[in-house]
Image (cartoon, rainbow, N blue to C red; front, side, top):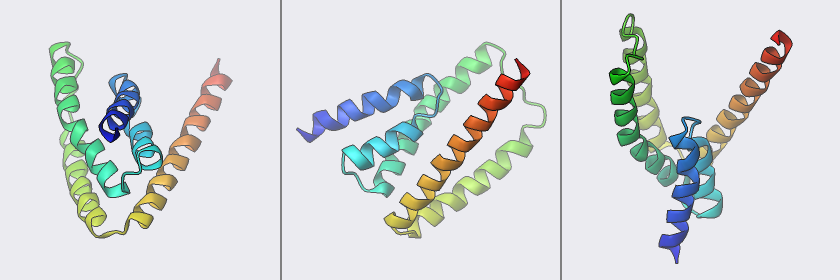
Length: 124
């Protein structure tokens, strides 16, 4: 039974991911709250599934001429360093701490989204 539950949760979380809306913000809570998966495993599964999707997206954007490569090093190198630092930190953090940090991230993301929506309404 658990295989079908995880398959369903992956499908539900994959829909927003496929639309570019940040599937991890849906997939990780689904896996932890509904699937009972530990936080570290859920985040690892989400990141692992992101690798092939990002490769395909990068290829498609390049083929459509949508990539701007000027100044890209200023984005790539900090992202690699901070990504590695985050991965090593997560390996040593307890799941409870990781859950709280992820929850804080989701709250911050929500506040940012609300602020952006209000600003776009004011401009209209």
